[in-house]
Figure 1 (cartoon, rainbow, N blue to C red):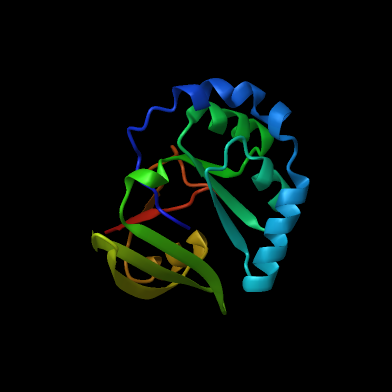
Figure 2 (cartoon, rainbow, N blue to C red):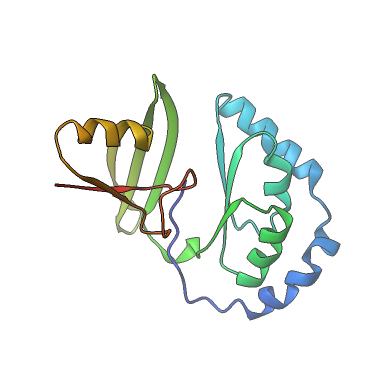
Length: 180
């Protein structure tokens, strides 16, 4: 994944073009097939694809059956079309031209329930100079019931909270446990 900073570039003309973009560009199946061939050639085990300047999501739609896809574009009207076209796909509003630093994130299966976050940050030092910061973070997740059971062996009371929902559920992405 690449982080792109939210910019102040005037995109008014591009925004106005959003309803007509697909009529002009088409479904882009050939281009998506070409991109997929490049991915297969250079990174055959790839599971995720980030498309910068994804527009209305035509390429995301074509790649979605093969990869977990994320799109970034600076135009909210373009992203509105993309959200309808590829419902459930994460699309972000950002302008990659306004951030001098670059974050590359590759998340892979480390086996036995472990996920490895391979993080590379290229810090812009000025001119054409960059400094690389690299870190591999190994992470594992457990079912909430397993965590609650383990905590209950040491604490008399365990509360579980989800900051995004009134109650924790199977859709919860992050839980907080409070113990007494």
